[in-house]
Length: 397
Image 1: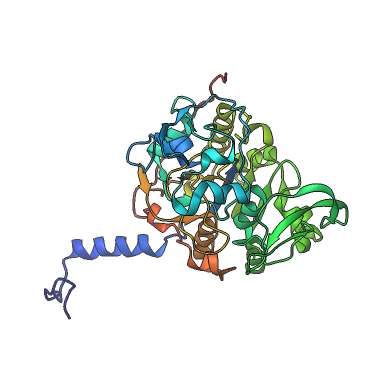
Image 2: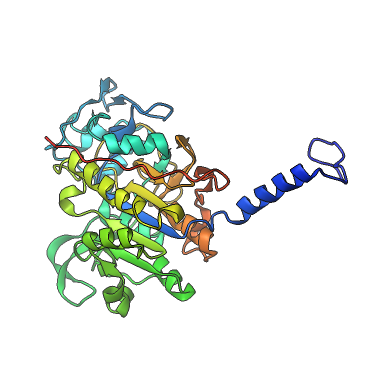
């Protein structure tokens, strides 16, 4: 028997080497089983360049291409940005311009998308990036806004939906009430307007079958209001909680195995909401986890639903007709996250589902999560667990 380098493997190994090998095998065997709680925090509407374009070691930009050719600097972004930015399906396609990434000035009437927050505006996010993992190849799943991308965070598909619900009539919600409609695209690119009520398999369905606990924390109805079999079943009443309940569950050790936390609107960072308030509030949620008994076995993914119309310079890989869309930030916060690591692996919303499916040996939902990275390159289960990093709120402008 020969090792990879061609040397003969000695029949007898020293006791020390045997012990080291056993430790390595032990660490590998529990990866990623060491994670007993996965938390997915979804914020709103920022790109990677908009938040982390100047982060050391990351692929960021401080200037951007325009449709007429000139390169313009990314201007300082006010805490509560008042510009009206377009993040629809059509605007995303136009902004990306077949990978040229030079059409952002066309979608919002000028240079409003070309702006950038500083570390001083989002210091907690930057501290997490320094201590844990920042991913600079995390793309949105759909060229477009919130609704289809939120569907991908729970199902690795959007049912063909490409935009948010619009209008006040013409559709029927999953609870039978009147609603608007949503644009849906078929495999041939044809668009229709349909009711915002879908019925396809979601990750919670797989979790339920496997007896794995889960909860969706949101101050409102949330994306599961658009999934018929969940909206009209006991899962709707038994598996939803508020953001206040999340804090209590985290502090008391009652978090389920898998949870989603969608930030309340006022701290979602969706313009014109304060990015400072969102940075503070996210730190408060993470502090609650770190100060609770489950920190040692938790992985927290903090990301953004869509690009919000802001500039980003990296062309998204096109894996199918829906995406990928422009990059958004992703932070991975865990005792087993590689310290100060910038991941350059291509991720998307479906990758977080792939991580959970890998952890619990669940089947894939769609081609998207089947092909997605399981994100394990961002973890080191043999390292000494990272301690809690308790961060403080600060006064906002």
